[in-house]
Length: 228
Image 1 (cartoon, rainbow, N blue to C red):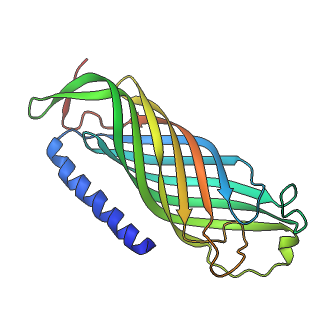
Image 2: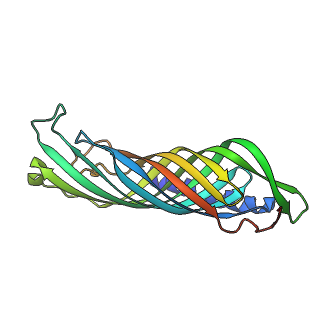
Image 3: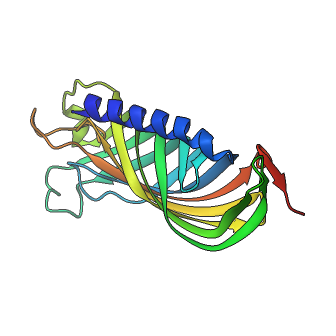
């Protein structure tokens, strides 16, 4: 199932990228950000932990962008204080991932004319935009067991494919600089992100990140004559 979704994602990304060349207005944006992440797993009581992200966003059509991300973060949880307090499990997991996501800009406000493309058409960029995204990638996770979980044997693969979806927003500060906020839900093909699974048919763990970011458009003038 995950392999089929991955293939569909690649086809969508390639098709959008190729067709986007007809619009003749592209830019590349470097993005860095930080925030918090939380894991919903079999061991409860998870708290918010720091997460960091860096990537490159490519504009491929008027309302479509593609972003390639690298991610680093950690998540943790423990049984004490939950209905499973007597079990006494706890964990601390490091997450490292790489992914690609297709973004569709649902809402835009305050469009500004920024230049003219090679066909002599006026080009606009919105000051505010809200987008939704869907993507997938590879996740490496390294759970460190704690409490009574140390005595539980576990045999699992530390690599997993993960599907991502979420909502984001951006505000343009001039022609080149942007600030943004993104909320993403990530569904890996593994039930061992906390180092524990109650059985072979356990439901996969799910985690989410909330990331605030800063972006800088690196080649806004590509195919464009900028207005001063």
